[in-house]
Length: 450
Image 1 (cartoon, rainbow, N blue to C red):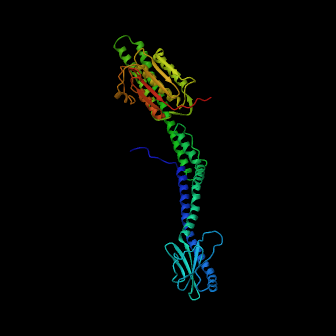
Image 2 (cartoon, rainbow, N blue to C red):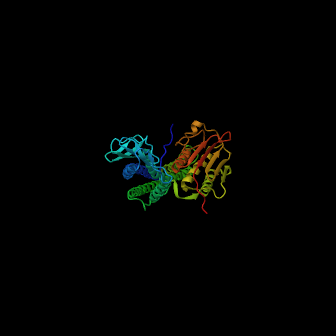
Image 3 (cartoon, rainbow, N blue to C red):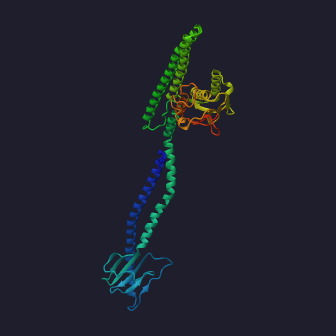
């Protein structure tokens, strides 16, 4: 299964990474504290076992001396209601129980073979002897009591982690957000430079590690600006240098036509004039294609497109004498506002409208629509096959038409759309109709300025 690989921003990675690191460090510290606490608790409780035995021993000795020889085992009455965590038993040299604490179970307490500590499966005991081993005191504590104490202490350390992690994540996120704020602004500034804005990128507030990157980006933008300016200058100069001699040659040819009588020479002069007109149109189209493929298609500030379209419609109507065929509708409120360069949009609109007028069925309307989301030009005429439709945006490709043309109009429109990030959709027949051709340009617009 294919798909785009999920990516996380640097802020998310840092925030999650630091929060997880804090949680792991806390857990590690809690585990280490548990180990240390277990050792300390063992020492404290062992000391308590030993202290209880040493305190009970003289009391038990006095009690044994004061009692009759045939007296039974005596239980020490508890002081108040409580659970004994340390129980004890006093035995004589033969192992008979002489005295015991209130909760002691002599059957569970092993008989001491030697003074000192002893660990069984469930108990930790300590034995102390007196009077040459005739009296032995054994104290005992449940091992589960120690384990419960350690678990309680470790749990007390771990539980705050559930509240700490969200707080730490929020705190780290805020800190990372503030710290990386200049980096995010730098990224957005670079993204903005890709939309026709070639001004230097500000590097204020950037970390020292990214300051050289900002300087390199500014240098690259400056070189790109120089390249685009040189290209625009070359295009303008080439247009002037090509148009002037062609116009001069065409003027001389037309003057020669006026002076020549009817005959073969006049026909040859007419052929030359036609060739010069086609050359003039072709040179203009090639220059437009060079501009469309060279860049500089976006303006630094958005501007309305409707005034540009009206000028283009007036010029096309005047040159082709088709004012009665053009059905132009512009969205109410002055039409859309876009960052598409005005000259680029004029070239785009002119080529689409001229193509529709030239290749549409004679005496049928050419519909031109401009609204907030799209620019649409459609005409009636023969259907363009689907395999040919996909090739029409290539230079010098033409559809099923007998009209003169260079095959560059749709190629120029497609190049402008690619360079400006617009969408160009071609359809034939017109959706909902039996024939015709429709070109739709979809562009991003911004709200008109007050």
